[in-house]
Length: 461
Image (cartoon, rainbow, N blue to C red):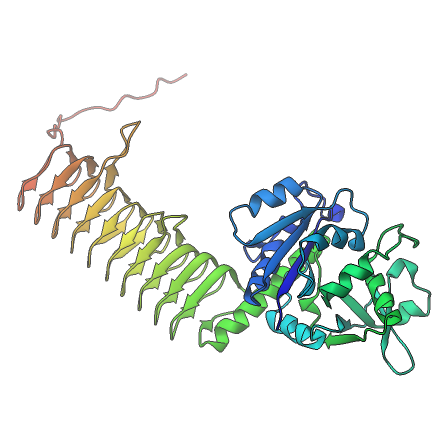
């Protein structure tokens, strides 16, 4: 196949979204609608991807600025789809094929586009169409008695008879660029909308004896656009159902396929078990035999084989990521923050928070604790209520806890310091200096008891 130039329509205002954000930046499955379309274009190995911006152009272009291989043209003012293509065509290669996509149609599949391009075959105008019992709002496909495509009529220009046609144009076409360039200069705006319709090129193709072919699909979700929050929510559920089906086909066991949200990339090994109401964002990998309890949020994390993440756990790796080794037990009600690096067989219990800290094999923090900027050795027992005081008001400081240390409950470790291997910290201690290996260290006020002490009593009114 020759070079494929993808042009993505993303200039519309999206008034019905009732939002200050450009419509194509609203998110579905954790990514902007437009990003889904760009990713699909990259999947079919497009030679060039041109995004037509208009309303909110600066915002749209800023969001995509870090991505390589994108080119932008602006449509100012927005005078219709044909006018939009007129802005893009100077960037296109006459020797290739132009594939026109919509930035608010996020679920179009790469296989469908490849089939459309094959039908185009570098010489035909190929349209992606859909048979639907509810065609309202879409352009209708016009055919002659021989069932050849002879035109597209937009909804506002259609007669009552034409409005009854159930084959609609999806807004997606593949066309030899050399022909598209010729047809675009012939467009006019003599229609109900007063706009330049890209769909008018169908009539030009017929007049020029260029065969117009239609590739029909029956999966409406592939070509459903987003114009309102209601449509966005409905398409989100469709997207999540598709993700759930793919996971189950890979062998993942979902307690309820309707109650999982994948807002990024979820990679699962064999025999993964996921309970209800879980959200996965960014890039998450679950090793063989991982079990995820209910109501967890997991963002940018790598979880090793056989690990259990119990209910209501919140794991957010942000840009640093979170790593959990094999055979670990996390939660319930645990919070792992960026930079948490937990080894094999580590236990993190209820209401324990870990940030920018490593824990070696077999270390445990089972209750009500905070670990920040710590390096924790093997088999350490980090007691209930223990916190690392790692922030002096201006800078963070590290603490090292060597192997086989026992930290008694309700202790405070004031960074920076090192707790020597095999040492014990007595409960309730505030540790501000390094401790020797094997030592028992206690740092708390002397207990005082006053016999027969009477509490104050309230005076009667």
